[in-house]
Amino acid sequence: MQHLGEIISLMVAVFWTVTAIFADKASHRIGSMSTNVLRLAMASVFLAILLWVTLGHPYPLYADGKAWLWLGLSALVGYVFGDWCLFNSYLVIGARFGQLFMTLAPPMAAIAGWAMLGETLTWKSMLAMAVTLSGIAISILSKGEGHTVKLSLPLKGVLLGLGAGAGQGVGLVLSKIGMQHYEAAVPAGAPELMGTMLPFASTMIRALIGCAGFLALMALQKDLPRLKAAFHDRKGLAYVAILTLFGPALGVSLSLMAVQYTDAGIASTLMALTPVLIILPYALIYKQKVRPKEIIGVTVSMVGVAMFFLM
Image (tube, rainbow, N blue to C red; front, side, top):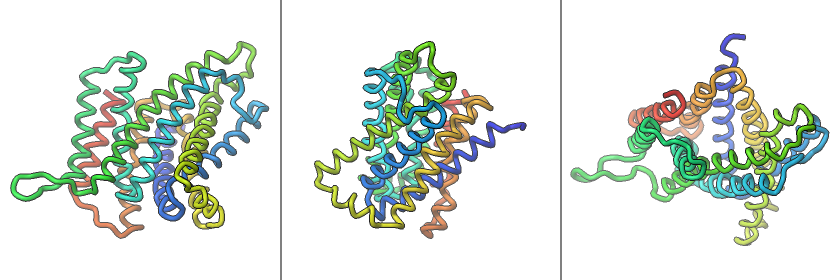
């Protein structure tokens, strides 16, 4: 089928839009930490079943200490820090603006790749960063008194959004290092499907460590009773189930499939359309007015993201 990869990539962007909306709903209903614990626990179960069916073992086969270390670090940075910031940003500024800050993930990944892996940071990448940041600035800044400029969003929400983008980008680079160690640990006589399932096995390690990290945070904050209460909230659990289905289950799986049928740069750009796709449904659900400058800002940010992958 012609353009199958592009069609799958657009489906992923839609699925991640659904994920963002229901993550917003779940966070408001049962709390961001409870949402993350339940989401990662459900994702771990799904991945265990997937690995069991495909490889015959419901756990990350062949992963050595280095793989667990780096993938665990990526979970702590990407999930525990990054998603904690993201889901809490939903509580302050909503999923529409929270997703806008996720366009910072590619620039942060580029900087982390340069710092940790020695990857080249070209002038084109720096230009793409500047364009992405300009788009975010257009969306969140407004004219103050006189010639001053002020934030049109709460500072707390902006800082959480910045943390979410940074956590996602740095976590991605750490997971890349972890997968390199994992791949090196796989023996020559491993099942043929192991290469295909490596990203899923790696994701399971990240989900398990991330879930443990959130549980530890909740225990430290003496917030575990809220998690217990979440199990009795059927609507909250339904929201978590939906965001888990469309995120770690379908979203991640189809994103891996998309790059098999089209260029990775095209796939990545199309899959990053969530901040654009979420504008209309979010505005309709929450009856929010969308200002022209916000649409312009999102568009400029998306141009910056596209520059990272297509230049």
